[in-house]
Image (cartoon, rainbow, N blue to C red; front, side, top):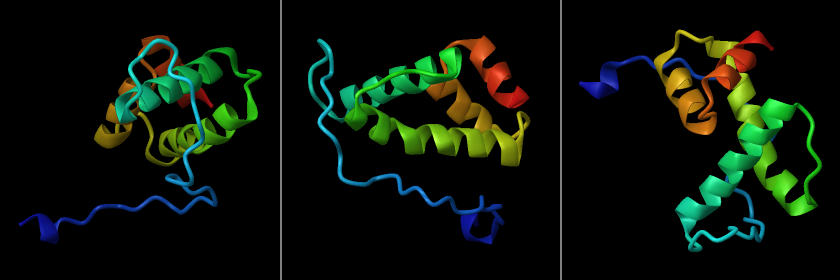
Amino acid sequence: MALNRVIPALPRINVKIGHVPQKLKTGGIEPSARARLEVLRRIVTRTVREERVELKWNRAIEARPYLERLIQLGVECGPLDEYTAEMMEWWLPEKDLITKMHEF
């Protein structure tokens, strides 16, 4: 049944997600894959809130693809798309940042 569904694909971007992971200090969180995502989530949230941040190279290079993909989802699919709304809610826990992303 699920194979018959047509899922619109987003255009490819030139940044690969899933490249060689950088060493990220998890800041008091037990090191795991979830802790890594929490660190990246904080970076993405802070970048959207402040629009410009200074980060160490390894953190910036690791967070960039996720932020670019989030921006692309917002532009291509808009605020009414279910998948986009779910991704925005996870990556941006503050509701005012979600509306800010859709204004870009």
